Image (cartoon, rainbow, N blue to C red; front, side):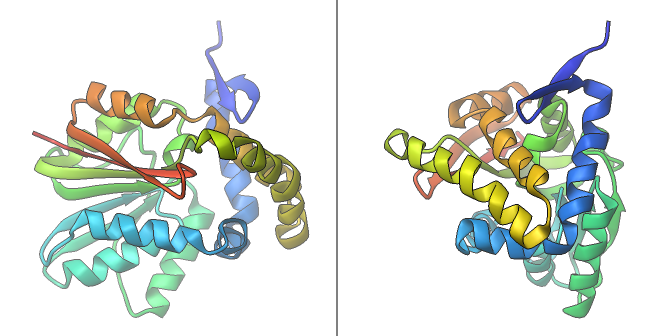
Length: 244
């Protein structure tokens, strides 16, 4: 019997989800940052800045940015970690990773990059001071496996930071739904010529665990001191946990 999972609101075979997600990001890679600015009214930059501040990266730190896409977090971490540190930019999608690599090079930053699956990280145990994933966890097939892998590669005392869309404040739910399912796909069609991919992104947000559920998943993965910060009325949440 074939195991199934969610691809937005659609049920698909587990072994087909990665291919379908790859198709989405291959399609939107070139307009990804522009669409982020448009659909969040620039708020994604504030959410990422908050995450960077909470990470507290210092010179000499080793940092792993998973599903790092166009490199916003990796850029900041590379500057903070300095020449004595090491920041890896990784993504399962080569198209996104190429965009991130080129933008970092344009900024004069040379960092190691790797196309890799968060469920099978090619790094040793107890290696990184910080592991981050921004807007990538919801696209992973086995989130619990990915979280366990993130914990595995963290040093003891290291911190995992998960920035992701979450459960919005209830009084705003209808307005948020109208925007997500009526306006966002049309914006995707107009700007990126891809309505379906942005409909999937809206659906994937609804299928992602809410704040408390993700907190429990991080605890179950073996992380301690798990907490979360609701940003913009819960449109996004930053979860953090420590490996002890």
